[in-house]
Picture (cartoon, rainbow, N blue to C red):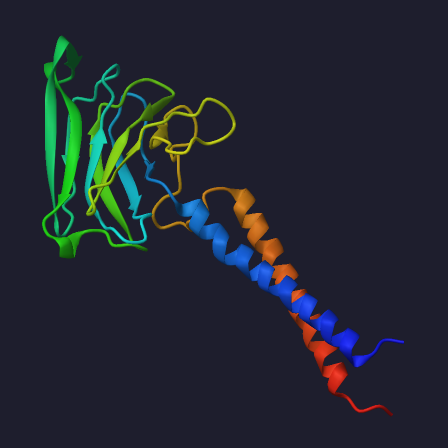
Length: 232
């Protein structure tokens, strides 16, 4: 025969299960949305594309004050335009090519080395728990499968995080470089207006977490109510 104390213990265990399910729900989006990403909805080999860099501040105590986007050297991009961002100033740095690139407008001897975004004041910096969007129109894009844009993220406490690692296997590196894919679908990473879940796996786990939490919570409530019912 099951006594009130046993039911209470069972209810507590089920409530703990519900809490763990909710922790899964809360924790997954934050993990999936971390790191600097780039998306390009209209990028094609040899063409121009709108590149959107999504920059989250991962520090709990410092703000993002500067973002340096480095362009490829082996497959140079010769033209870039920046979209203005309130509270930030952009500076395009160029370099000289050893061999001119021939375009429809004639030979081009300069290429884009990097774009530097800097907050005009502490008030404009990207604070903990926030993210910023930085848009560039760049081209002609190289006729390659992918293009990487190693990016340096500067924080207000002097910390610099370099997002410059390329994957060597199935697992994502600790500091992956933002990469666009030019050989398949146009978008290499989630567009800014989409959900922050970066892959279907976290999404499925979130659904499982919701289901487990809901079922466990209902059963726990029933168990607790039974302990309060007087014996017939």
